[in-house]
Length: 509
Image 1 (spheres, helix red, strand yellow):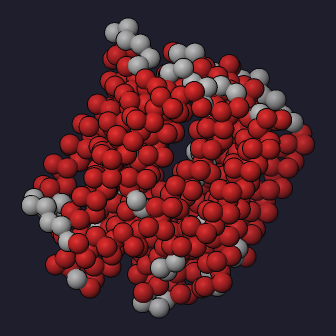
Image 2 (tube, rainbow, N blue to C red; image 1 turned 90 degrees about the vertical axis):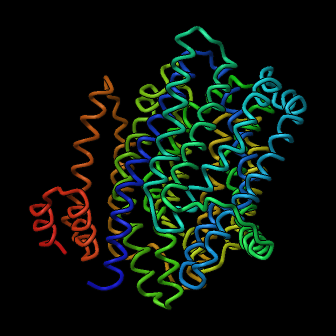
Image 3 (cartoon, one colour; image 1 turned 180 degrees about the horizontal axis):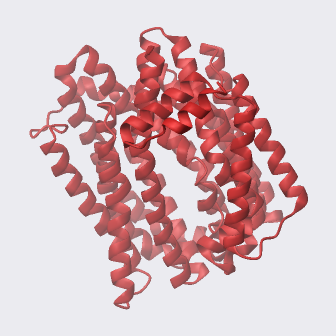
């Protein structure tokens, strides 16, 4: 087996753990959001969304891009200067935690000024309650980043995917059953983040991934800061693309409209689930290919992961695009059905990200993080301008168009820059076959305008359509040897007997 095959197997093994964790995390987060959306009114759910949005932006600033820069630098230092890794780790943590404490104070100070700007009568109370979670959120994110730099995925599963949302859900449900009100939601969130960060710190020390005695290096701090600075602005702009819509809906309307919109937005954000899961181990492996000069191997890795991510994502896309009312009704209830058109628009932008593959992580792997920043500047600018012109006229549909356009713009730029530097792109022959079949199927389904009588009928139709899609992919012989290697890796990791499937697919390679 060549190096690419081994790398794909490693990505597949890691993807299984990360995917399981991501699914659990998204399920728990969705459950918490659904409980809040159903237990409180739409205005309060919108206010909760705005509070979490502002908190997420503050966390992005406090992280300073280290959640992406630190794993890359740890991966490099493990090969070149292993003895400096402990100092590198604690230096990065020190910088980020200090920044998080500062951002906590800034958020609390600005809360009374932000509330009237977003027409929210709760924000001046909810933001000060939620802001103390920032240092704990940042700590957990950085500890997971450290494990990622070592090529490990279990810490992401335990300390980021499961613990915080599970603890929040348990505390939230307990408080609501006890009759506690809306402000308790934010106290529950802070408590969950505090407990998660504490457990993660103890676990990382025991595993030897976090030094017992902190060390700080000014030289390493400068190196980390300079490498991660473009990633900081990239992260901020990512949030501009992802959350400007909610903030500007609050500015032009009120939290009730924000709540309605966020009956669609979280569902659309499910689409990059497999992409993000595959990407967790992709970057350090792609970095190894690039540093060894194996661009052909990196290209094969890129195309194969893009093909598999789209293959796995397409049934989910069919569900939310063809049957948006069913998707919204399932998760958030009938009072959010007005967001169905917005869900279709948003899902178009997110599926485009899936089609383009892991271009952002590839740019970091080849040492071009500034390209992500430039792409996000274009996309964020387009997002703000489109929101400004479209939201007052078209409401949540205008916000959805602005967000979808920004994601498409960012991915086009990243894809172009990656191709310009390496000649790597996601459009292999078999990738195009899978994409063409998918687009044709969705267009036919939208034209037929099928209206299922219940959610179970929807799932039945979806199962049949998914089977038809996978059959078409196989008949068109879009299976490659790397796909078989991925299945063998999954078989070895899970213990499942996939011989029948592998032998069947090998006939179509």
